[in-house]
Length: 153
Image 1: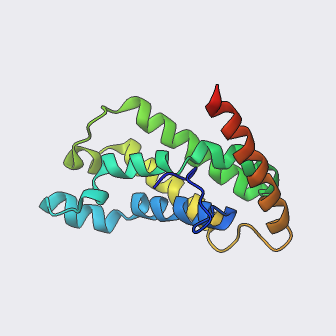
Image 2: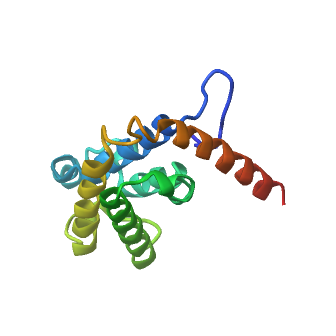
């Protein structure tokens, strides 16, 4: 799924965007699933660490921050930037093809999981709040227009 794919039957909303990001984050944070399935080699394709990383990329974490930063509480701002920074660090420091057994014991992955937990706690059921919903919808439209313009170039 491409977060930019907006159609009349399935419009992208701020709520859907955060829901998609949270779903990907929950899979990254799920240490028990990773230990159970990665060690046994019984993971589903979408549970492989490469796919977890690609899913966050597909759901455009950087675009979400760019579009909605003005609506975040101070706690949310810290949490999402820590998650974003750790995600970038992990991706930069690891090979393109990840070995699940190696990822399980990688201290950087553990730190990413911790940052992911904090991100989830800051946003799940808390964003957008009632005050920022209208602003988030307006910001989404602005961001989508700017993204479309950038894509034409």
